[in-house]
Image 1: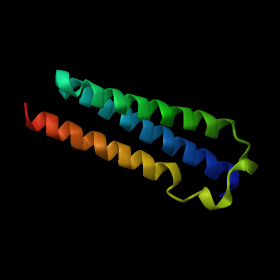
Image 2 (image 1 turned 60 degrees about the horizontal axis):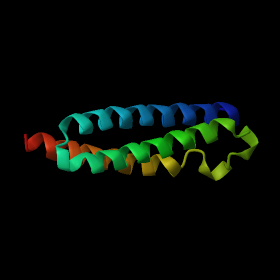
Image 3 (image 1 turned 90 degrees about the vertical axis):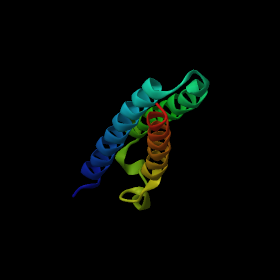
Length: 97
């Protein structure tokens, strides 16, 4: 697989993860109580930072992607942690309703 194709595949994966996080944030927003809005706002801010990272990745020339970062967890590991935090928040909120 060419490096350009691999980079494009990673960007698509990042976008899919971001979409999942957006869906989780909507669930968190729907499940949150009045006292929990600041937590949801924190998730929204984190999502915005992730979206801006994707925008940065899209502007990089293929040659500027580090060889060792392609195929590694990199930002996806951070995104998975955020998604897990949101999922736990949603589960907690939904179980208390």
